[in-house]
Length: 620
Ligand SMILES: [Zn+2]
Image (cartoon, rainbow, N blue to C red; front, side, top):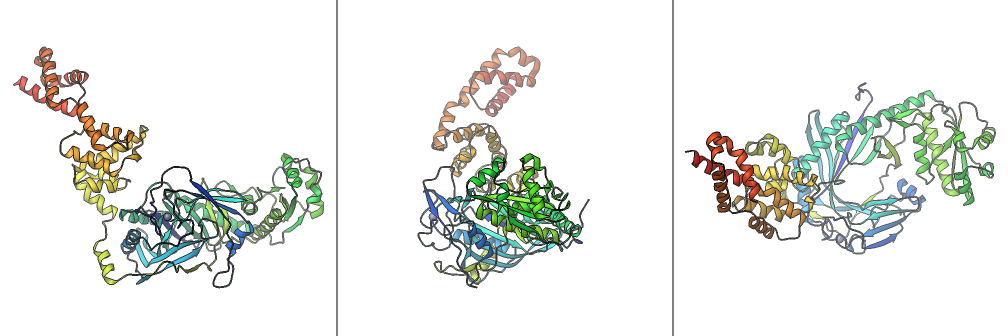
């Protein structure tokens, strides 16, 4: 059934984060081309929430600190220096990143502030060694044309990428520092997106414009979407770090479904208090392995009575997600692995006696659900408080404003409260940058063609299909570098078809660099090698990426038979097959071709050309 998003009071805005493929990071000279290697060192830190300028401590910061986690940073010599460790002040803002970001800003007609001020944005999850992320607002009030009307681009920021999360548990979080500091453009739309399909169109369009700058990084995790979504009776939810733009519509559909079902569930339920208590004494003699292990380690068991929830905990709320997960997520956010409750099969846990006692203690009626949380004392207590509050909201049909994570099946799970506003202050280590009228008009007169425009332009030369293939591939910039060096159709075909083919055969084509293609296409355009040699050469180059490409070209050329050798062999074959030639004429070419190729190592196109010539001569 198609949802009427207008009627639901659907509101949605997206934030796109695109990494840039600049030479260096945003505030230091470390290269951004990350390679797969192991860390050179580990650094350990603990973060503390400090009061912001308003004097209030951020709620999200407090929650994070309650968890008192240890942070471990993996340091990579190749991609890190003291700046990423926060032991040296940031250098000035990278020009290449700034120019790219400003170019994008003008592509969506946004206004550029005359003074660009780098700010510190507080981060509380340890994803930055300094406890904040540096960010500069570089554009305001832009707009994007879509098939569903204009969507406002509220703001555009240039900022530093956070450290990549490697591992997280209740005690510690491990981050990779190599990603930290890569330039990132953040593009935020207003909330005028009309429905999930529209969100997808907007995300794809912005992605394409970013790529049109020619400086967008490609590959897994280099572009991420945050989705803000709510319905009228629901609440603003921010889904963080979604990477699969093709399924953003599904993600939003499911979140709307969740909010709608939560509201409906609340209408069926009665608003009541959820009671909770420490019930450790009831479990002292328990046979349940998990609970007894917890108690042996000075743990505790907390129980809650949630009125009216019998039969409701296993209702599906979005996709195949149960209502109970809404509560489990809140328990987990404090460390415990989950909850055990009476709306599931208690006999599975061998806890019938204990639950019988709990029912008496809490005066449980048939409709009430009793849930327990077993964990280390403090964690169990906090988890019980969280679940109590969340359950009371459930009874009221209230949707919490919160940050959520996308799951594999495009449903979402609770991650943390929405970050508060007390988060920004100026970065005094980086001087502000003036942007003059002249600079803006220079940018305006040098805006790149959009990908759609380029597709149309290249279609004339290489045909629509190949043009669309190459324009939306990662090889676009290589194509644009070399389409004037050699025949553009051959260049496009090599990049869009031959390279992926070799990759699918298991060759490490990602080791091929610009230099390889430069030598390859130059050799081809000067007729030093033929079209048929291209695949073989690319193979050799990706197998020996460190070898001088010219050397590899010479080796290939040397190994091939020369034109004279080919001609000699061709003449020999023609002589031996005189009868066949007489009988079949030009139709003999196929069979003769095979004969020649068995005798020499040569490029097929070349052999075919010479054989054709000689055959022609014999027939005349
Ligand atoms: Zn660095």
